[in-house]
Length: 164
Image (cartoon, rainbow, N blue to C red; front, side):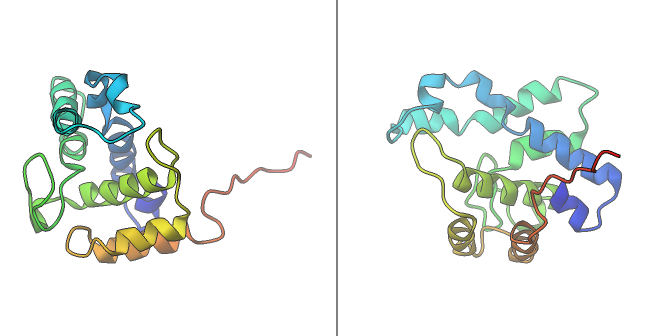
């Protein structure tokens, strides 16, 4: 949401991105924890099952009339890449809405900087080095703006007012 706000998006757009961020991996509820938390490499069959989570998210969210179409799209397409090498639909370039591009960048950054059962966390600078090697896959203009936001001294700081 901070990323969307920093780009000057409306409150509605920020809210949609926040909802998409919260719901994008909802389909993982259909993946056994033994696979999601597996400390080693996944087998081909396990990887194929994990890669179905965007479709599972779509199934869950699209069945609810109150869920905006953009939120469903973010959940379904957050693993799509600009060069068409992503999944589940192999979308390319302008087929991928900006909201999805923002979420994809945020999601990859989160995956790289968080400690997981199968890997250690990376520093923000290490994560960005990897992400900037993804030329052709990610929107580099948005990635540069995201990096500037994340590496700014104010990002992530909790602001509290002194009590009188």
